[in-house]
Each structure stands twice: as structure tokens, then as C-alpha cells.
Image (cartoon, rainbow, N blue to C red; front, side, top):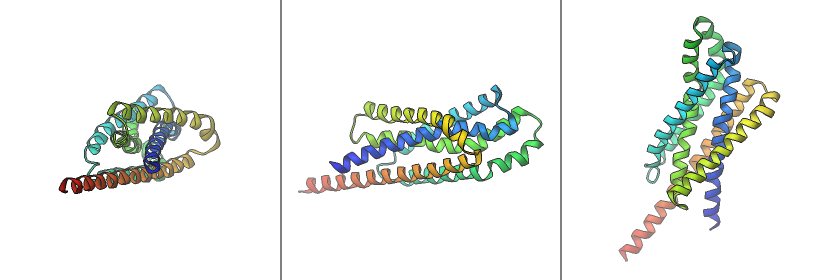
Length: 218
């Protein structure tokens, strides 16, 4: 009973952190772009569109992974590794790439079309992959509708927390480069936590199948 409760709490915490990171990252991304492109409606249009496309693509990919998670956690591990590397890439090289390449691009639209996907699409897509998988794992304890409602609802609360804390505390207190490192660290923690939850679920289901097969044999 206690193990089951801890598992459910773990799922919801991962969903909350995913929501916090994905929406807060949009504000940090704007801070990274602002010295080079400003903060006009054009910048926000490309930034929001990039994040929405990443959310959508992540939902599709995460849905596919959720169909495999019962028997194989390797796709989940792959997403976690790619996501961690992508966040680190943006933190380590984002400012350098902007400083080096942006002056060579005359068009604002072209620059945004290059840098928004390059720096932000993969990290956000990787985070978004988690929600369908978490929803699938949560169906061990709730029906599909309630599971989806809990995971997406908690993630949205995380979105709100990410926006408010980033705007009113993190951005005024920390340099953009430090915020990018913080996001990378938190994303890695989130991904590792996600793998741990997925692995625990896979082991539990394998144990249950083995027990069912043993009982059927008798």
C-alpha cells in the first residue's frame, strides 16, 4: 500500500516539475533571445509557436512511447538522455551561437526561424513526451479519464508555478546564463526521476504477470 502511494506521488511530482520547467523555460528563452532580437511580437510569435509545436510533437511521441513502456523502458531512457543533452546544449552553447551567428543574419524572421527551433524545440519536446507516458503509468491506479485529468491538471499547475516563480523571483535574481544552467540541472533531475518511476512500474507489472502465470499454471 505504501509503495503504491509513493509511486502515485512520484508520478504527480514528475508531472508538476515537467509543467514548471516547460512553461518557465519559455520566459528564460525570451531572455536569451532579447539582446539579439528584442522582445517584439515577432519574437513572441516564433517563441510561442516553437513551444506549441514541441508540445504537440512531444504528445505524439510520448503517446507512442506509452504503448511500449510496459515491456521496455529503453525508449523512455532515450528521451531522457536526449532531453538532458538538449538542455545542456542550450545552456552551454546558446549564447555563443547567438553572438557568433546572429550578426551574419540580416533578416529578423530568418534568425528567429533558425534559433528558436535550434535552441528550444528538442528540450521542450522531450519534456512533453513525459505526460502521455505518466498518464499511461497512472492507469494502473485510476481509469484512463481520471488518470489523464490528474496528470495534465498537475502539469498545468506546474505551468502556473513556473511562470510566476520565474517572473517574480528567478529572472530578477539570476543572470540568464545561470537560469539556463538551473533549468538543465532541474531537467536532468526530472528525467532521472521519470526513468525511476517507469522502471518501478515495469518491474511491478512484470512481477504481477509472473504471479498470474504461476497461478494459472497451478
